Length: 444
Image (cartoon, rainbow, N blue to C red):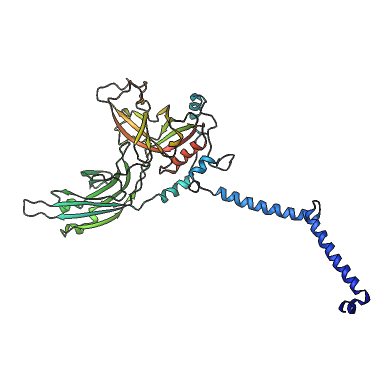
């Protein structure tokens, strides 16, 4: 046979010995990889550890790149996203809600507020503004009717046709935009401008692209004088609870539109309006929620960089107070309201006042809070120091009500509000119950 030709008479025995040796070597190698202490076992274990570490590093890197928009509301409620996270941007006040309010006031006196949440970095705020820009377009018509004889004078007809692409409301209320038109005369000095005429359209609810089709006629308009006019157009949102929000603005010089004075037909123009980002100062709010008592506590700390003009003529007539409205986020209706005491002629008001609201857990997803900075105006001749140190809460029987209110700025808090800092503050309060979380907000 073949093995006899190769190995001689001992060929069969040699082949059997070689086969048995191969099987024994395979068994020894297999046992070496399974037995602790052997070279194969230790090498295989070291390689698996390195693969596992690489996988954990990539997973942690992905978790670090998570943003607020990538995290659902339920994950904030159930998980602890910022627990033992030294690389995060949230720093909380470690004091519990049961601590005395005097200790909170002592912490607020420091220049650097350790309890303030730096939720959004400066560079992210700038890029956030670019993302939130809306392409607002205005459709306007102009027509000049020349004078006829000595009886009929020249007329300038300005038509506000429509707006398109308005931004949504800060909170889940009804958007009611309207357009204010001011005719300003350009003088030789750019610092002085004389307002000649003022017009305003009606407000249209439940739309971000209103159609007005309203015309305003200016009689006795001479072409030589009208060429020096500037159309100052501003779009506002009518807010029934606070100050009207400026949405966008546009300035059109009639000097660049000379063709309307040579032909009496109607000329249509489309303009891209400039979005407005009006700010009226900053307010420090410290909020905590107690789940067992189902109560929300809002501490009105202080204000800074307040721009009370042109709503208030001078500092002596500036009597600020804070009004808080509890709104239904779905319908926009007012549920509760409270306000602080007012202060007289203070540039940087410090209230240090606490307002509490009974808030069930079932309403945390839908409720919204509107914090409004108001000014109290007293009738002429009435003393302003009568209720200066008295409680001016709307729940008080002795509340001073014989004055008018002017809203200066506002900020909205809740799940569905538009501002990212406001939403993150609200989620941080719900994520950290019984803790006082304070943030500087911008009044708009």
